[in-house]
Amino acid sequence: MITTNFVDGGPVWLDLGTPDLDGAVSFYGGLFGWQFASAGPEYGGYGTFRLGDKAVAGGMTVTPEQGGPAWSVYFRTGDADATVKAAEQAGGTVLFQSMDVGDLGRMAMLADPGGAAFGIWQPGVHKGLEHVTEDGGLNWVELYVPDPAAAKAFYGTVFGWGTFDVEFPGGSYTTVNPAGTDENAMFGGIVPLDSDPAEAGAGGHWTPYIHVPDVDATAAATQRLGGTVRSAPVDVPGVGRIAKLADPYGAGFAVLRGDPNQT
Image (cartoon, rainbow, N blue to C red):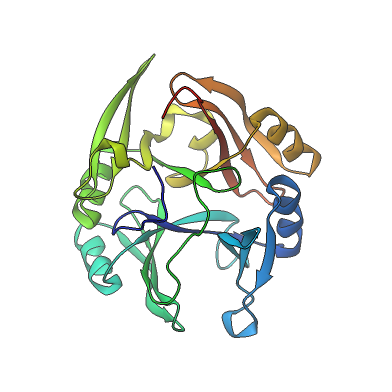
């Protein structure tokens, strides 16, 4: 599971790139109750979404030249430069080289061989997310790639992730966990890109799941606030109820209410 007891290779941050930051702030505020605080002009207008006094994500304006609207997942590293080098040697692509973000930390943006972009974060004074797993917080991440076996090899080399195949009705699901842990520390999954029509059109990518108290109500609110239901709410045995959504500008994400019978 995702926790704030951060370890190398685990999810540590989440942020949104959008062409309309004010509109996105209004949308996610209405959907999850998030509030937004800009970090100021010295950080290019980047800011933090908060639930109460706890950070749940970041957000910034992006131009079409910088990329399309999307959520990005960041993984913790103790050495950003070494992780960039490892990713290149494993067949990945460097989208943005390592750089310091003031005294907050050091980051880079990479892409795996399947085209899925992700970030890495070497913490300084900013350690990462402050509210996870519970309502309004990041609960799970999912990787959609054309070749899951190649993805397992890549992330295993870069981060040392372990993997487990979990059996569900209709097939198995590959989960991932940080190096040196077991399946009880799983935080995400790897899924064949062509297995989900709601995700296939985006190419290789990561999808974040936000935990909510009522998936159906959240899907309805998404439409009311101008977003899109990409995949209607559905029960997943042993997991909970999920839906795939997008904000009004096209950034895709998912929501989950965990099965109360699962611990």
